[in-house]
Length: 144
Length: 143
Image (cartoon, rainbow over all chains, first blue to last red; front, side):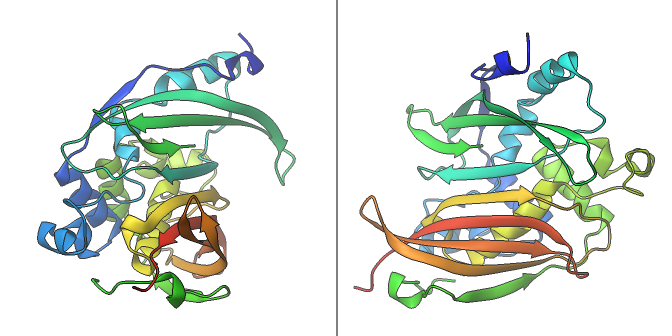
């Protein structure tokens, strides 16, 4: 396998049960006191079905589903990096989702590029694309 | 909260009210690790942080993007958010006071919706840039 061959490769499906306690916990960790993330009455008064998820909440699905582990393992098998950092993250919000929804994500290697950083070091950028779908098979959130 | 924001209320060039966060604490990083499930030792083990050349632990990039998300959903109701992106350009350490600034850059129509685009810059109190980002929201017209 080569780095180029990895483009297009899909990795194991991750299932994420969205929980209300995680919505509150994420807002508390961020220090976000916006009441829509904490109080269901305020959320409903503002047109939400329940507490809406924080814009970055799907990280919970990633990490607790060990989404990145097999990808990192394959990358390290080809070449062990000195360090791995998060370069970019982009969310496309397609449909509302709430606690009680069960989202399924299939990660895919969307692109592989190489760059040289400011200090002349070599960087390999792996773009992972995940489409999260709900229990009705509807596209909910596209993450890159 | 509860005040409806309309497409007509927003203008290209508008500087959105900066979100100024309290300095990053070790407990905040721990809470974010627990909330997100990201238990990378770079974020709680000073030795690992030092060995990686950071001088100690660093905050998760996504914690800082979370601050940017907090700002965006203070500027615009969460239900109107359509796209949100960030490029991580600098690390954040303990004690750094982060500020999120945003600017409206474009207004238009897309798929039958009123679209507002903007950029955001997330900085430390020394002016160092942590994140360059952008957002897209769809706003209703005044009745």
